[in-house]
Image 1 (cartoon, one colour):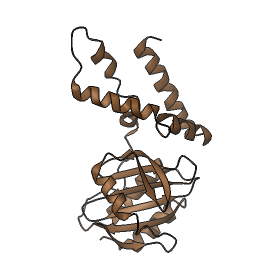
Image 2 (cartoon, rainbow, N blue to C red):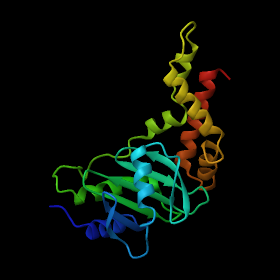
Image 3 (cartoon, rainbow, N blue to C red):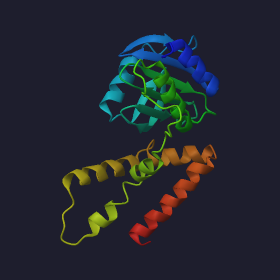
Length: 214
């Protein structure tokens, strides 16, 4: 039995108290929002960026949030200035956009947000409450390193690199050089003293050294 948007948001905020504001959308129409958040002026840009799947950041209530994860059914973005984070999830019926205070963990909260979206769905079996979500760590890590397959592919003598792969590598290098790219994320998690992320970064650093033999 699906719950109404107000109940879904209430239950979500009880599950993760770091989620302090939320809005439920149908298409681009806000059907429910908490009293402390007005994103009516940002909805078009949020939905368009999410649909386009290529935005590097989103603006919500005048704050810039750099994209940490963007997939068809979920979105995670953080303020590199420590002004909190945005996490959102959607299905065929609803979009749920949430704001987390600076102490919140958007990567962990996204699992609860997806479950909240599922609880509103009129289609049974949309999301198993016991489903293990957030298993994108390895995928995220591969993306953030440019993909460990780049080394072997590029090192094969006499074999040209696929133009699409070259484009992906160039986009990755541009992201590394940007102020709010890789360096910004690393600085953010170091400031947050996030031991899990720092540990993963250390592993990636060692993997890169092995790939390039340095």
